[in-house]
Length: 272
Length: 215
Image 1: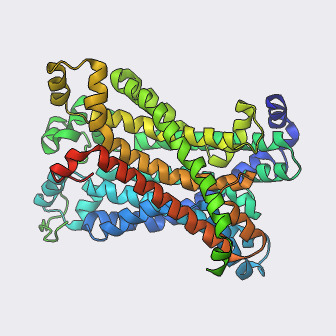
Image 2 (image 1 turned 180 degrees about the horizontal axis):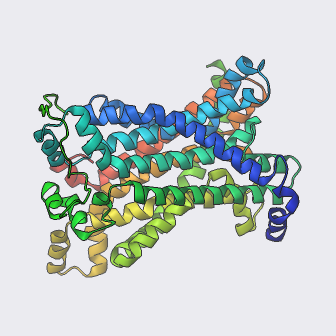
Image 3 (image 1 turned 90 degrees about the vertical axis):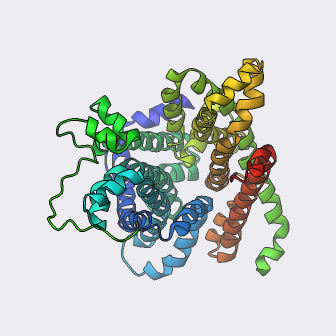
């Protein structure tokens, strides 16, 4: 079985033309990207708002927990069954693809939302108070202190959403959409196990590569004050809060070293 | 609702198989993750490669894993054994880090006190460190339980007997009732697992109630 799977994977026929492995990888990534983009547009602002204001926390926590219990395959079938008649008039494969994309986006929202709100909520209160004491408005605190500090958790939420979306995009083939799941489903119909296993290996490798890539981006997108990437002094800044940032001498850009450009310096009276 | 009542026996049968496919790996995974988590704690240099390495297992999409595993196990693709192995791998992937972090959450003063009272390292582990790590491990187990129940239903695509078969049944006949019943049954099963873990955790951690802390 292993030999024939390898043969399928290395057969040049499967590497060019429509429906080939590279094509399906691109389609798979395209579906995933659209779903993640839509989900982020909704979940990140909502998560930041929950974390910043502390309102709707109960809703956020429970949504994320409950969403894990919903079987994605069931949701997918339900959505296609419900939306198919509404799109059947339109051209091409929209009738399969649109419901699949909706399900993917719905599945991606809870982890992104949870990461965003937990990240903002977990910001050291001392850092937040210091920012307020320096005269930042609520929005400034959010933009310059809370979001940079929340980056690791925002990213990890986005990463788990990405993994879930890539995994579930495989299921989209069951309802007729394209993507790497095609090889599994088509192979199963004609009892072609090498094609199924080959397609599965490609999905698994794609998921691994995307996750490692996001991990690398995260390393460089998160402020060095949090990752300890550059100096050991900035690493201490994480646990010591304010005093640590004083140690990271010079112009190091720890999230706590904020310059006040706003001359008004009004203290934000809103409890955050 | 009438569809549900008419097919109660079927829901019960598939629900039981679903519970086994999701629940058994939970126990196996915990048994495997305990020594691995202990190792990651005992030898600090193992922590990063262990948590990252087992975490990678979790990135493999479930459907892909169900299809690839027969290559490794040598069993037929429809054999539920593959699903059990796959779910165990996912459980281990989630729990190694949790176990290591849970053991790490035991205060140093407590282990020192236990040593001073004459506990051997082995006895100290089972009598002091492991019980104190239960709340953290149980939190990880709850996540694994709920996601296991959901992932097992993906086995529908390759024809494994479990609640997800209601999804494909309803989809093929363009009939909502079985899909809705399947989804609700999955959620109920997940809640049931969650409740069992919570009750067991409560029984294992009587001191949390005594001091009024939350489990």
